[in-house]
Image 1: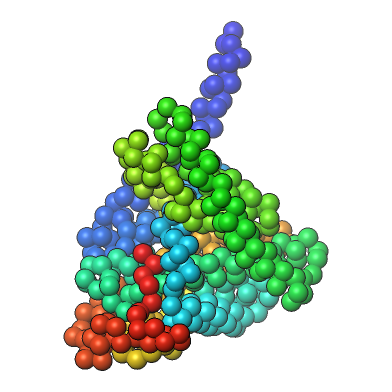
Image 2: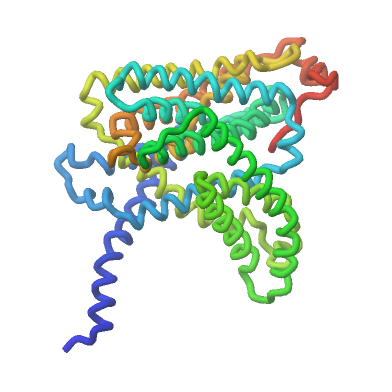
Length: 444
């Protein structure tokens, strides 16, 4: 008779086997797709998305061997962890002092960059999907308000223009945009959760969610800044290796959990944990272990993030694009996404700065837009996802297009010869609302 333990082990192996095979297919495909796109001077994330689309629609070519990837909950959990760690990493690259020092132009650019696309996205969704709930229309607006500055930062660095006034404004606005976007996501998600539970929420409740998000960010950051020195001093007393990674990830996961308990998206807590870590005294522990925090985290995100992006691509149903309405929706959504960010340039204060370049730098949605869209597919209203497959497919195409068009457009605009007025701005001609003669601080 086969022992019960052997039977249990065999059953567990049978359950995990599809996950192991799925991970292998996803990682190899993501790496190949990313490599091809980078050779074509495009972001690797675009290749990962396209690989996901190809894997999810292989049945069109008569190959059904990859259908098992669609229903693997374990892969979805790994993808969620990847996004939590991505926001943790983004927060760790931002200092509180930088957030407080960004100039008035960055603040105004970010505010316009959230408001204008949200309105255009709402109107676009309402035009093409009038039968869907108003919550779906609002969520499409929330998707469009996202900004992924990583693509812009890479282009500016490659052009040698990372220290220009335009770059500093875009990077500063991106930090504020991230925070505002997370608050919008929390507020809209709260509205949908309440509606699904049969409750209604008025303007006061929405303001309450927004205030709760801001209060959580402020209080948790303050508490974390007070607590983190003590935690890392305790960690330094431990002699085993890997203390820095274990302590940092524990901070991330606890903050993400507390954010969930507060009714916010876990990524809000992860972003806050990154801020706390960036401003915490972990350098001594990192010096003892002989490795930086970034070196420890990159292998983990390198494993988990491709899972997220490929799974996002897997959700795109190419059959849906045979429908003229969905194709038209994707096209108009792309126009709304680009126009909503180009208008950001009017928020630049002072003279001598290229407002069009600032608007172009805010266009890409990248992984942030995918995160927002992914959250929408997980929110239910009357048992159905708020973001349907048709809407999601259009949103993914919008992300791809904005990711694809930004590098060449920004290279064209920022690579041209600068005018004397712009050179004067770069040398310090900027005058903010407070009368200072220095451009807005870079946010890294």
